[in-house]
Image (tube, rainbow, N blue to C red):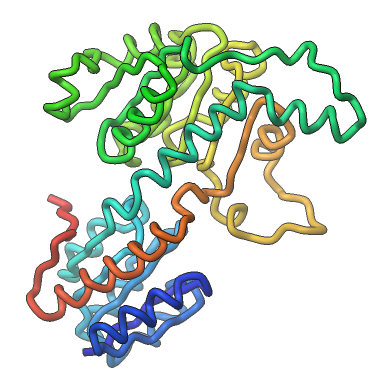
Length: 331
């Protein structure tokens, strides 16, 4: 059995090597992301493992089919950059890692909120200029706020537990309700109820056609004045132009963002000495009430190990048995 893994970073290599030693399977590690230009490297292999934000193209899966490869395993959760018709057409089985570490994402979302509530970015900017005065940057306490969690899967529930630990009131919305949360009376029936009641709105849903730009001008208009927005899920959930308008008019007091709808080419790239050619992103980045991290919520030792080794387990299972525990259904 031979597997090729694309986009392997230095921090992933120890966990890949550990898996190879434990499983006695040959794995070729390629540092470049998977494209039509390098898919030929997969010829002679039995399965492909990959991780990237940029889209996978039809040509990639066409070549895989030509090479007799029908096992494709993602090291991440999201499948929104996988062309569904292509994997169906070429009979490619796809798996993901649905829960590499829910706590990693949840913890950073709460960290972002606490930084905004305590005005940390503003104090850092002031202090860098020698201004150590408190006013006018008085803080809010999380224990006095209502947090609306949209998406109550593994990550959403992990975030809820942390918010509850701070003493916040937590409400939730999900199309698919968790029975335990249902018993607690956590859920509201509509998104409009979340918008009307929450002081903080945090997104923990996958990117789907139905929720593209779910937070738009209309949604922001229904929210409390001074609401905080957290997006540690997918950039396309927020209409960025609408968010900027809501920040400008004070509807939104602050935003914590680990994702951005046009992040490819910006995040996980060294931009020292050059200007980022994206006026919308630069607008957000310049604000001291917007905290941006470069899609790094997942980036912990535990999560990286799980992403590498679970994806390899999935790929090995596809090759051996034609099925895997984390196979993605596109039906």
